Amino acid sequence: MAWEFYGRNEELEQLDQILDRWRWAFVRISGRRRIGKTALIREALGRHKDRKSFYVQIPDSEPAGVLSAVHGFMDTFNLDRKKPGSLLEFAQLIRELAEDGYIIVLDEFQYFHRKALSEFPSFLQAVVDACQANSPVARGCLIVLGSIHAEMTALLEDQRAPLFNRLTDRIDLGHLDIGSVLEILRAHGQGTPEELLFYWNLFEGVPKFYRDCYEQEVLGKDRQSVLRRMFFESSSPLRNEAENWFLHELRGRYNMVLQFIAEHPGCTNGEIESRLRELDSGQAKQVGGYLVNLTGSYRMVERRLPIFAKANSRSGRYYISDNFLRSWLAALAKPVASVQFRPMDALIAQADERLKLAEGFGLERLAATLYEERSRKGLPGFALTDRIAGYWDKGGVELDLVALNTDEGMIRFGSCKRDPAKNSLGELGKFDGHIARFLDAKARYAGWSKERTAITVRHSDASKQVASQAGYLAEDLLSLTAGL
Image (cartoon, rainbow, N blue to C red; front, side, top):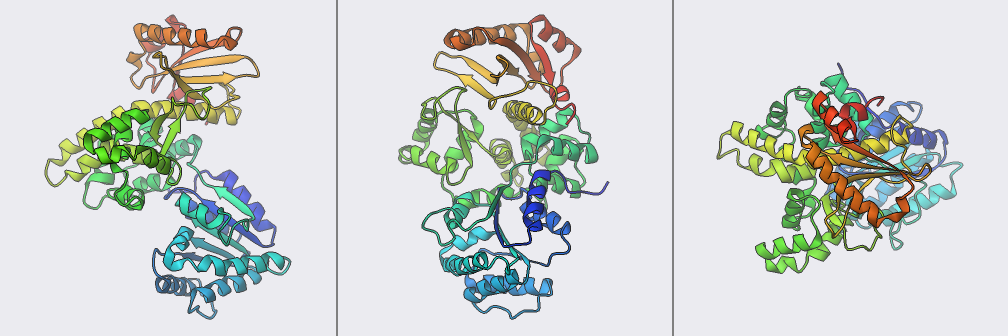
């Protein structure tokens, strides 16, 4: 079956509305690398073939390199205009095209934050202001795509930036929803719960990675065949993905912090400091600053709080925010780096075992995401009124998932185990103790309806019986994906 364009219906509809206006628009589309920004634009332009378009991928280069790229794309698009000899003339070309009704797309726009190209935003400001003032005539649309959050923010959102407050529309491109991931797996793989957890824990909702697997003809194959072809062979397409598109932006900084968080999801600030103190006492003093940058500027790390906690609570825990980066650091990086020194089959098996450990935490994230997606789409299940989250406290209470429906006075507690056998009567009994201590501390829920659920990848008849005997719902990825 041929590869198709999956998901993104809301974003396509938003772009359709922008382009159907037939007046000046300055649009920012941002999202992590490989998330599908360029594919989205290509699909949107295919739906508006009555509009002329011009696309340029901006290189990370000096002005001469940018102008050379512009000339090349002008030839590709058969654009019969004077080729710009400076960044100022490139900006003037954009104005000409906008006044002629073109859709102009500048990909990798964040590179204009580089010092060598820093005069271009000022040139572009004059163009944007002129087009905005003359919008009945300038019916074109300028769309800028970018993947580095901090640099796109500096170019477009900083009050001191030339282009501040010039955007007419914004689209933040996130991961494909689970329904779209399932559509891919059902079309090109098996679509089983085990397959969903494996791919989602590894790739989450990054369409490019799934397409890479499809093109390498391993989408739907066994786990170790996928890992071998995508990561371990000399021509593997994802072998250098993390270093090329994530870690090179850091230029070697923060490596120890990221590695520790990947291997210990849910660690605290104190635990990170303690580990760095063992490795490098100098860096341990800078942990606070590192975490601020990794959570803010780079968005590689997220700080989560237990449900109901205030934003300034000291009970935050740290996680790698991107599944691919977390899986790479926790399970794949070291085995892949050792290919020249150890048997490949043994390294692939080792990486697979490490991934299975990482999938325990991945299941919690996947279950929470599925709860939210089902509720958002109005599918049968628990109707959420708040974001689903976990809960923990200094007294040792640990709840994997807490779901609230304040409209109906319902609260649901979830225990997530990758292996259904681990939701035993004994373990569920311990979980009941955590729930009881939580409710003792939260008197506001005394009169609420309370539900308990045992979540796993795929329940067996025996594990369903155990859950029922303990008074728990038996939910798995089969039931949580029904209807998606």
